Figure 1 (spheres, helix red, strand yellow):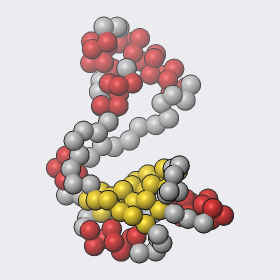
Figure 2 (spheres, rainbow, N blue to C red):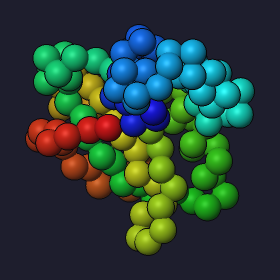
Figure 3 (cartoon, rainbow, N blue to C red):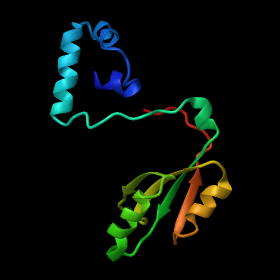
Figure 4 (cartoon, rainbow, N blue to C red):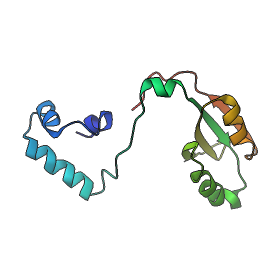
Amino acid sequence: MLALLRRNAREPTASLARKLGVARTTVQERIRRLERDGVIAGYTVRVSEEFARQRINAHVLINVNPKAGERVVRELELRPWVRAVYALSGVFDYEVLVEGGSTEEIDRNLDAIERTQTSIVLSVKFER
């Protein structure tokens, strides 16, 4: 059921029930239980492929002073152009997924961050 909900969280329960071969009330109860138990923490919006093609996404690897790590993550969380921040092992401390309308916009947004390595996403082959 989670795979179906990840694909379309707004799919009607009757449709989910048909695909799963169970009663609609069973699907409703399972969803309520998953929400109650914290398995489903919330729902989000997925934009259309057409809109996504108009946006530029980049993966930015950054290094930060270990004492400043928490502060940097809090600051990045406040930036609407930051989609996600991942702590890493290895040479870089964090991977930051960013989005913008142009490479110039992404460049401006990243100017305040020191020691970065950026890769622009050319195309998305699939996403879940």
